[in-house]
Length: 430
Ligand code: SF4
Ligand code: SF4
Image (cartoon, rainbow, N blue to C red):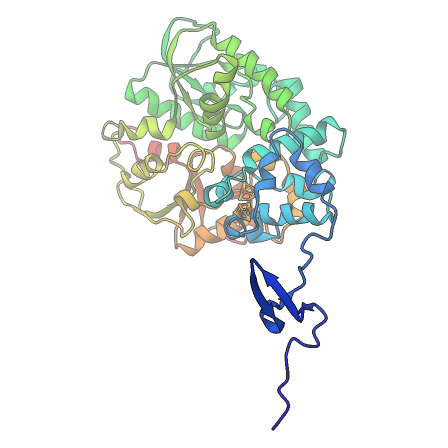
């Protein structure tokens, strides 16, 4: 008879005693066989402990490496990045997150938090770590440092003079009340924000929205040169002190005027007013312009056709952060002739343009650490739907996507338009 081979007998990790007694039961030979305990943690934990000790970053320690976040992180889709990977790198001590490029790549888009079973909250972790890095004098990418400096000096990340903030009004074609000149009570205080005040394409959208509001008979006014950046993106990028300074200044300015509601163009301003300004005593009923117009869609007088297939990019700070997905779609679908098509990644699982959380000012830096810019990836997704128009409603997006249309070779195939521009084009009396 062939000799029976015991597969465990020569394995050095197998422990087998001739006799063992467990809770009064005698277990001879193979019945008490077990493997020697494996060593799982054979590395120092100091790196991870340093991170999770920073106030705000504690939840990174809750990660149990399930990997759900990796599948939805927009940065991982064009590179190699996710909370799971960051945790692991910190855990094995290979990467010092506070000195790593990984510190600046998260756009705080919130898609990982949406799926994370352990509430690992990158929306709190990243600003906390960045703030720590800034305070410790660790390297801030120069382009981001410039945006911080501009915001500090001029009240906007573009470095434009405050006195020019309402220059766009001159070409609006309708009267726009500037409250510093005409401080009577107003129903709607329109918070225009920086990019819609200063950039050419942002100003196009501002003029379109001014015309729509006027046609609706809305009693509105703007702060003009008194308005400063709401500063939410700078906060997320690590400059909480700057955010607090401008929040206090903006709340003080708003305190001078009487109004019922704040209307915002920018979802980042919406987030600042809804979530963060109340902590500083600034509590306002705040509405994004798409929500405001969607509730008046029947009165917009949309009679002119726009015969085109239109897709829409959900801004992270309107959608996932503030729960508004329907209003932009209601408006686009109300345009005569428009054929609306969603991209496969949309609504709660929308992709990110790359501009959030300071990404707006980190394009060159991020470009060195990904295979393709997030905005380029998104433009390809829009083109794949067959759309001719990519509709947007966040002022960060128009320049990002227009650049991406060029760099992906899609000039002439896809145009980028703010929803306010599309609505104004479709108005009967425009
Ligand atoms: S989803 Fe949450 S728990 Fe799972 S790997 Fe990502 S951060 Fe960790
Ligand atoms: S917030 Fe967005 S970009 Fe940042 S890690 Fe999560 S999924 Fe990735």
